[in-house]
Amino acid sequence: MSRKIKKITYLGLYTAVAILLGYIESLLPVITAVPGMKIGLANLAIVLVLYQFGPLAAFMVQIVRILAVGFLFGNLFGIAFSLAGGMSSLIVMTLIKHQTVFGITGVSVAGGVTHNIGQILIASALVKNNQIMYYLPALIVTGVTTGLLIGLLCMEIRKRLYKYD
Amino acid sequence: MKKRDIILITAILAAAFAMTFFVNRDSTEGESLRITVDGKEYGVYRLDRDQIIKINNTNTCKIQEGKVWMVRADCPDQICVHHKPLDHTGGSIICLPNRVSMTIVNSRQTDTPDTIVS
Image (cartoon, rainbow over all chains, first blue to last red; front, side, top):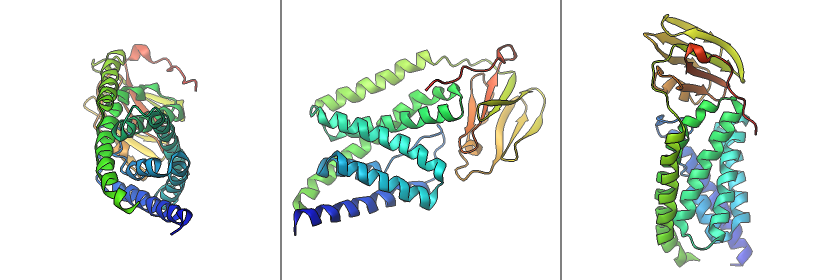
């Protein structure tokens, strides 16, 4: 199989997985200790793409995922909101990964935290309420927790995916 | 997991912990509820008077026994409706899709909040 076809197939598969994970997350009961709190399951697919095919491919999958999930289950407002979180987290993950001193878990944690920070900044700008910043520490802690779990999962998945590379 | 990952995680958690000191959460009982829509003030209501407030036909909130909560919102996510009732100064419930924000304030600080410069 040619390299290019393999890449296209993989990216399509990852995009489908990312959309599905986003859907699964929307089915889970909302734990509303903090508004804007998310598990960020879809980030699992994004981190895997970032490691296997690099930042450009990860950006493409992220944009397709956000648009697809947004039009299927959300609205334009939600799309703008997800783009803010998704893009800021991907930019930070790319930068952190580039430093090579951090492993996949560190990259995933940084992504989870910046996703939450990006979303709350957009939220507080939109409602013009800076009281919302009260939630920042709690959102950082949840971002670390989910990012850690997703990072560990990614590590295990990558060990097994090498066989098919 | 690399050792540096653990250092990174610890640093982020330490920063979050340090932040809780800067975010000064005043835990005195609040006196009034300020509602803003799209950043503009919609109204200020006293918390000691039980009432139901309709906000622009999109949201409805209820004040009872000094606590306030959202009883209805027409948005799909319903995050604000599930939010726990507010009674302390500085607490807020925000309905992002409708840009509705409810914050508990002391009556002496009913001046408008600083706008966010982005």
